[in-house]
Amino acid sequence: MAGVTDPIFRTLCKEAGADVMVTEFVSAEGVLQAWHRNRRYVEFEQEHRPLGVQIFGSIPDHAAAAARIIVDAMHPDFLDINAGCPVPKVVGKNGGSSLLKDLPLLQDIAAAVVRELGNDCPVTTKIRIGWDAEHICALEACRRLEDAGVQSIAIHGRTRSQQYGGQANWEIIDECARSVNIPVVGNGDIASPEDVKRVRETTAVAGVMIGRAAMNAPWLFRRAKQYLTTGTIPAEPTPAERIQFMLRHTRMAIESGHYGDEIFTMRAMRARLLAYAKGIPGTKPLRPQLSRVASLAELQELLQGL
Image 1 (cartoon, rainbow, N blue to C red):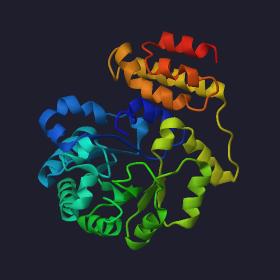
Image 2: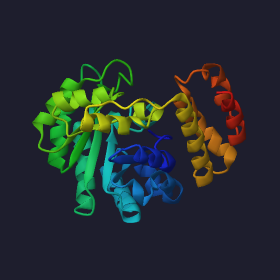
Image 3: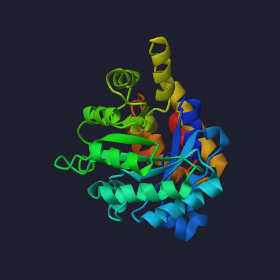
Image 4: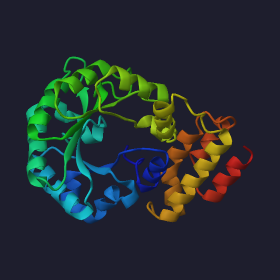
């Protein structure tokens, strides 16, 4: 979710019913070497709580020191260790899901952060089910993380080698949830209210994490919660409502100054706009222009005909 779950997007997800959110992740080394430059990735509004700050790294002492800097400066509700990111740039630094190839190191990192933070801040971890199909290690990873003092684990139901292809394996997530005494949150292929209800009723997970589907449709949180509460699935937003959402997100991003001036903000927003536009009638021919849009006025003109 790097480049996605910024303060503006989190505000919109909170409005849409998200219960708990996590910041973009930040490198432990980046925190130690240039905290003033990396702080913006973990800034949040008080109304975003409960909220966790996520870090990644491969050296236990450095992860612990970075966690201390973040907790003392930001006071998040929890500190999350990323051991699930499959991106080569992160894996190449022995961070993210590369830790699934070295579970003793993953345990050492978690234990070091837990010791450093003590009672100041709970520590959680995000993992995948394994490195590849021949190395499924989620169950051992969960037991090691529980022993290290981690208070909750989120599991994405794919291996690192799958990236985001294939299907998430919820049987393994369920097995892990039944095998440890701390909450396990399931993640992967949750794209509808029905998906949320199904895994709630058929697995032992304590909660559901939604990532990619929220990038296209943040209103999924509200729709899922209403379905769980009432048994009725609310209608999807109309195309007109989705277009207004696109414009509102863009205005909020520009007004926040989070990415700098308007042109830098629009560059950061392009991927978001393409995601929101998916499925709106009439937007397919506009996708090349949306991928180059440089101002709010230009975006309004593009969408006006819809």
